[in-house]
Length: 264
Ligand code: ACO
Ligand code: LMR
Picture (tube, helix red, strand yellow):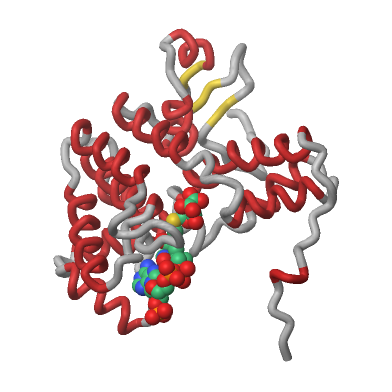
C-alpha cells in the first residue's frame, strides 16, 4: 500500500487544494450562490458546520453591534494614539486589539462559563452573585463605565429582543437577566453589559439549536471561542479609527500635563 510521510500540521476547517477553496467542505461558489453571509462563514470556519439561518443572523448582529463604541474606549484610544505616532494599519489595529481582555470586550467567555456553571448547578442569582463576591471575583458580563440601571445598553436590548423572537429557548439569557435584577438591586452601575448578553445568549444558541452535543458545548465554552466575536467585530471599528486619524492628518499625540496627577 501507500506509505504516507507523517505530517507536521493537522487542519480540519478549510482546504485550498481543489478547483476552489472549501470552508468546512462547502465550496466558495456554493457560499456565494446561496447568498450566505459572514455569519455563515463564521459558522463554517469556527464551528465546522452550517448553522440555521437565525444563528448566522445572530452572529452577524453581534458583529454589527460590537463593531465600534466611539473613540474614548480603551481599544479605539490605543489605535488612535498608535496611528498618530505614524504607525501602519496593522500596528494601529493590534495596539487596539491588545486592550481586549477581562475588563474590556473580552469577558464574553468568562460570562458564558460562570452563567452556565451557576445555571446548571441550580444556583439562585443571590447564591451566585454572593458566592462570586466571597471569592473576590467580579461577575463577568455585569457592570459598565457609563451605562446604568436608568440608562441601559441598547445593544443588550437589541440582542435579547432578537433572541426572544427567534431562539427556541432563552433559559440562560433569562437567568442572566435575573442575575442583573439582583446586581442592580445592589448598585445602579451593575447592569448587564454587551459581553454578558452575548455570553448568555450564545449558550442558548449552542444548547437550543440542536446542532451541538453537550460535549461540544462544554468544549466551546472551555476553549473560549466567544471573545473572538468581539475581537472580530471591534477590528472593524479600530481599522476605521486608524483611517480616520490618517485622513485627518493628526499629529503625534501627547497627553496634557494638566490631566496627570503628579504626586509622590
Ligand atoms: N461584579 C461585582 N462588582 C462589580 C462589578 C462586577 N462585574 N463591576 C463593578 N463592580 C463594583 C466594583 O467592585 C466597585 O465597587 P467598589 O468601589 O466597592 O470596589 C464598583 O462596582 C466600581 O464600579 P465602576 O466604577 O462603575 O466600575 P469600574 O470602572 O471599576 O469597572 C468594569 C467597570 C471593568 C466594566 C467592571 O464592571 C467589570 O469588571 N465588569 C466585569 C467584566 C466585564 O464584564 N467587562 C466587559 C465590560 S463591556 C465591554 O467592555 C464591551
Ligand atoms: C464598548 O463596547 O467598547 C463599551 O461597552 C465599553 C465602554 O466603556 O463604552
